[in-house]
Amino acid sequence: MRRPALRALAALAALCAALPLDAQSLATSALRGHDSRLPIDVNADRIEVLEAEKQALFTGNVRVRQGSLALDAQRIRVLYDQPERGRPVIRRLDAEGAVRIASPSERATARYGIYDVENRILTLIGGVELVQGQTRLDGNRLVINLETGRSTLDGRNAAGDGGGRVTGRFAVPERRK
Image 1: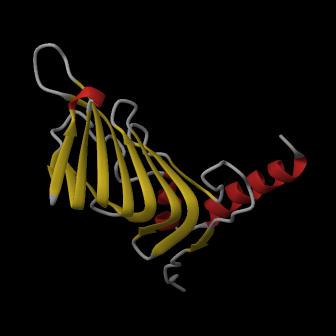
Image 2: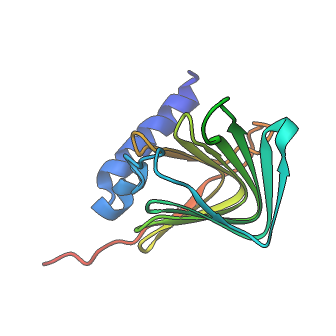
Image 3: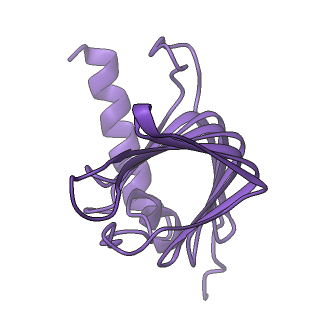
């Protein structure tokens, strides 16, 4: 790792230690431990099933609910496996167009979203805004590990190039004198 990167990492660690607990908790999503085995409910204006490709295309005000996780977008492509016997098993959801993810204590918006159900990873890409209480972060790529609750927001663009920045506004509680 380059020295400037090490210095930036050390500065971030110092900042997190100095932040109020509200801001520190951004490192852990409220979706930690989310059960990706729960049923997935989908509501949309239209569905098109592409059986040969094992995909279903939902369009128009799409709403997905799984436990306390809400995912909304204009279009969501569902990729699934179809066992010889039994119901389809959803592997992944690809969302685009005004993507919104919400949990009981946080919400995020972006242009694109990927919910990797198998690996329990949520990824938002493009103009990401993450709000938790009065704290707000903006970046270009947000990854939430649903197993650990760890969230990572960076400024990289979809091609992985640098140059973007992460910005934030953290609420500072009043201190007693």
